[in-house]
Amino acid sequence: MPVTVVLLLPLLAAIVLIALKRRYATALRDLPGPWLASVSSLWQVYQLVKGHTEQEIIRLHRKHGPCLAGDCHPFGMLTAAGDFVRIADNEVSVANPDAVRALLHANIAKGSWYAIFSLPDYHYVNQMSERDPQRHIRKSRNVAAGYALSNIIRSEAQVDALLAQLEARFDELIAAGQPVEFDRWFNYFAFDVVGEVTFSSPFRFLATGTDIRHAIANTRALALYIAIMGHYVWLHNLTLGNPLLSRLGLQPSSHIFDTCLAALEQRKQNPAVRLDMMERWLHARRTYPDRMDEAEVFGAAVANIGAGADTTSATLQAFFYYLLRHPQYLHRVRREVDEARAELSPIVSYAEAAKLPYLQACIKETYRFHAATGTGMPRVVPAGGLTIAGRHFAEGTVLSINPWVFHRNPALFGVDCDDFNPERWLDAERAKQMDPFLIHWGAGYNQCPGRNLAHFEVSKVCATLLRDFDIEAVDPKQPWRFETHFTAVPYGWPCWMRRRASVVSK
Ligand code: HEM
Image 1: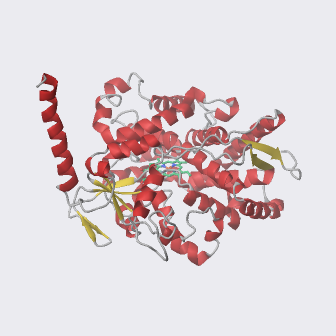
Image 2: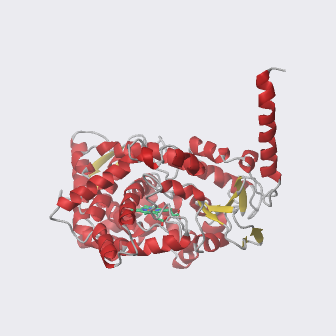
Image 3: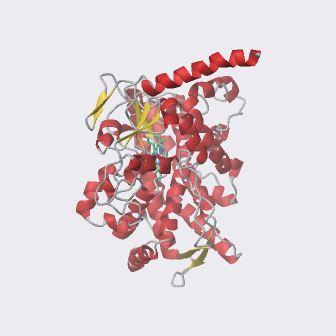
């Protein structure tokens, strides 16, 4: 027998044994799911590379779900999401409604996948990468004042200036006869807003009209790396996440770290610094120096840069994309905005936009229909185990919730849950029943801290642009594209824009 075969045979036998042990020597063996998933994290990696984890997990939950009514077929509309699908040897995707309370609202640890978000290396554990619930809650309290709506609103005049700049850029493109790529411009806007609100200064994406330091291109490349390496954090820590290497700036994430350092440096020289988020955090550090160290302040700023732009851009794009594809809702929301025109400021204020119920219903439906994050939010079952929907899970099992699975569950959002329909939110009683399962921000102690800022931005941008521009897809038949790594950020749907005739240019 050749030597290579002699060497390979034991290796092969070991792999088969490990696979069989993972598949069967576990309390999860009876749960449905792909065979590869039950023996290896490679199934999740494969889905990440394919780019539509969210669709695949919805499909699996429906395949194994109960029939709601009539003649169900595995992927049919009338099939509710099955409660559990095994998506790794020790991980289960959970769709039972009780899971929101049992997993997200409970103070239990996040899965090891989140550790990858310590940027540039594990010395900088930010809110996102902090897995321990108690330490996480302490960190969140330290920075909470910065994210409060009352604090965000202090920056409204500066955000208005950025939105006026965005409109001016659109005017230039219109004058030049060029289509608008919303993925690019909404990302520029959202990055600049994060800079303004966090550091009292925009990054100048809008002013230069360029992808400064290739931040957006790098973030896209980084997204796939992060999503995959989250399953192999040990490998990341040995290689690109090794503090020795991270100092050399070789990591895909280095641009976020560098952008933050540059913004902090510039902030020190800026005489016009306001009571921005950074000031709030520095104040907390001055008041309680034993509670918060410098790396924590820095980590919070890095987290904002990493988390605040793509997500907001994805949501803004989804709002316009789905309204363009559903003219009946576009006309209604436009009519509402036009009827309120006399009361609206030149750049619509947050307070004014919040008073437009149809607009707010469209935004809520956008959050539901295209949640900006499309992978699961994993949590680790604590000591003593956890029971969901009558099923007991042992300590250490990873249970994850994917917002897309919840948002596309007909049992929660109605049999038309696969349709974009803002009007589902107009009935207050029905909205009250759906609200707890609208989990695009996550929920509980890990809930997105940037939600006030994001909703503030989205409300203002949507109201102002709806009032001021007509928008039309260059090719209405051409669907957009997106790949779900952690965020699901669309691209590739250029639009023509036109100033609306009744609107005087500002
Ligand atoms: C529409 C826009 C946004 C959406 C849909 C969104 C959604 C989310 C989600 C789902 C999480 C993860 C929750 C979990 O894993 O349990 C998250 C975390 C986070 N987001 Fe957002 N986000 C948005 C905008 C923003 C903005 C504008 C900022 C900051 C300026 C921000 C900062 C953060 C931070 C720091 C975390 C980590 C929080 C933690 O783990 O405690 N996000 N966001």
